[in-house]
Length: 260
Image (cartoon, rainbow, N blue to C red; front, side):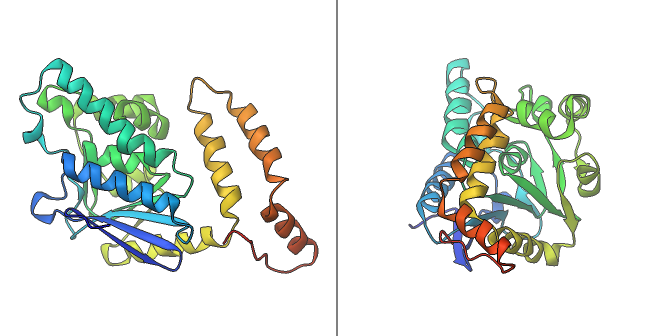
């Protein structure tokens, strides 16, 4: 697939998706959201790729926010359509992808950029990264899931403070409050992401997909997370990965999962 605003590279069962609008600090516009959606759908169907890393081009910005010029004159109806379409097309898609998605935050992750990072399964950041949801300073609130995912990650009180103050936090503060898992220097960010991806790749991709569904169920009000866990746990017993994993353990060797 050809893209104007993103780059997709594949190597060693890992795909790196890079938002490539450096002159705009990688801000999200309609075209970029559509391209990201198409890329993630294609990678979901790609049997070779097992882990996806999402990052931004350059050393200043992951995604500096949404392209405000595209919606500054929207009506109430248009605003609602924008948020719903964006959530369904990209943010919910990433959260529920069956393959792990790691956000490698290489600079500013603000507004829609932070919301994009939060839709990934977990996040790592470079030391220069700054994160925040500044929407209330524009007279609006986060519309791509920010009011829902941020409290899940950092707690209600911290999320309320960040949203109401519109303030940015540092990478280290983001780590302290659970928003990111690791902080490293800029030059080692993708190296760390690939190192973590390598650890994931040693395990059963079938089991990892089941784990993603079970964990996500805890945050779905229409589901009982414990019941989903039981069902996903049970389904693993019918897979070749389970047979290979348990056999390898008993034979004291490394597993060679058939779905790798």
